[in-house]
Length: 219
Image (tube, rainbow, N blue to C red; front, top):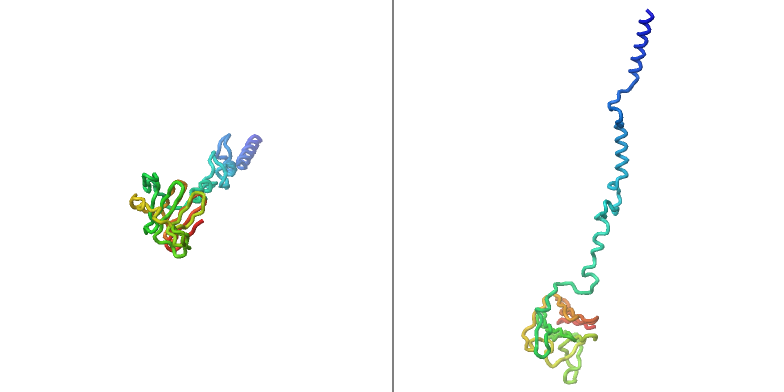
């Protein structure tokens, strides 16, 4: 009778022990799921890809937002050259047995006829503006100018010539090629362009001129 009671007491103790234990759905050596989640979050927080700095170098490459277009600037800005369609100087070249090869062009209206030579750029004009002052003529008397010219290293000036000095027709070289509005001819250290508002503009060595039928500038 005492053995039966002892056995019953042992069984009751065993059941109590089992009821107080928690069932674990993972085997020996496995980490708890809660631990895996917290460790993954910590790893993501320290990963370089999670950085909010747009200029941070990742994998040896800078972010595309850092330093981009600013380094590519400079194109034509700051060069001082006029913007426009560049033309081929060879299309304006004419060779004379007396002066060799020079470059001739007409304005679209054909009122201003110009030449770029080795030491001078000049335009013979059929429509000098009324605001242009009289100059000393070929006869020594004051008269109307018919030409603007710019010698290398000197200021441009209005003059009166006895013939159409800078017109290719006067040199028996035929009509000059038209330099259209917005086109740019650069040759022999000289740059010329034509605009509807200012007419012909040419510069050489820090000096230049603009000439239209309504206004002029020399410097």
